[in-house]
Length: 251
Length: 320
Image (cartoon, rainbow over all chains, first blue to last red; front, side, top):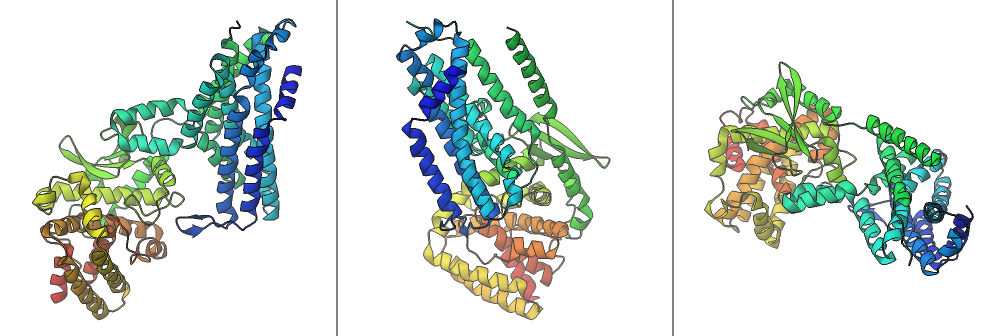
């Protein structure tokens, strides 16, 4: 766990965390202040039940972006700096090394998400929505499924490909996952070869937006699908196996 | 090694739990909606469309992968999984192996469609928001498309002849005619807004004389507008009013049967004066004319003549 904690401390020094996270926190506070003029279909959004999905959408999206940004160069940089040799001489396997680095990526991503949920919690308390406040931990974990998927995926990809390529693929998964429903509709509407190709692509991209939606539903006291949560956890589990399977060749 | 074995076992348990908690095939909710729609047959019979029975048409529910074909046999709903005919999220009546069948997205997919596209009371897709769309709304949609199946089964040739030569081959692209010649013409749009206002007043008027007065006022505006358009464009409008307007009327009446007058009024009537771009306004205009025909001549559906526009039939019945 020493490797993981060292990596976490290093990440806490990264400016991207504070820039992206800071903007998101400011945006959330602005939205919660009542000064914003959001509207959907011409109707102003002021009601708590209408604002909450907006909050969760922003938190979910920014958490996913941060998960990629914070995970993208971790493993690659360790090898670039040649610090990996210091690890091998201690008898640590590649799996343990990559696993702890990936865990550090995951931890820092979830910590950033936690900060956003703190802001959301303050908003819930301010709105007198205590029943929402008490449901925040499970909602945080549901949203965390998307964060974990993208963080782990980026970590795993960066074992075998350059950081840029890993980032591009992860971003494609992020966009496909966040717009999964819309793209699914487009695939069904367009039809033909293009529609089929899009359908196959979507069948391997997890529906990340569904996690944000389930999180919102749970906070509002609605039922969520146990199956969908298990699908998310299973996805994390399957990605984690690549930490065992994939090996990095050192020069 | 022991750790990996334990992790593997954990994965198998997780995968098993995932599979066991999943639902496969068509959800029971869609089957219940179909049964609810069938149960409305007696009330729909009171509308007066001769031989219009939902059980006569198979309903294909498309879930994104397959068509689940629902039919009524001996009073029971039967489901068969088939390869998708259209592979698209549309609500329509489509000819399959010599008979017209109803095609709708499954209710879950319809909700996703509405949520993804955030369509509200404007647009060509539906009049409901994602949050509103549920059991009753899907049942009403099924009846809407079943009306199309009835129309095309009985009056296919008449309907095909509504559209004049220039646009008769456009088929699915007829909506472009509306965009190009109606929505882009400020004078036509202005007259339409007045017409819609008149129609709403006619529908909500409480005395038959007031209704007649508003209809006659509407007639003048309509005649003025029609002079600005070619016969071919007018034929496209007549097509949408007759075919979609009548189906929308059935959909709205089914919705009233399910939800009651107040919710029906809020959903279908309260904002009918609003001009919308695209073809949806013809749904509303056609529905309004059907509602008015109910007031003036309640057996107007007997031997309906698709070669005449709803306006012609309405004015004939006022003169009586």
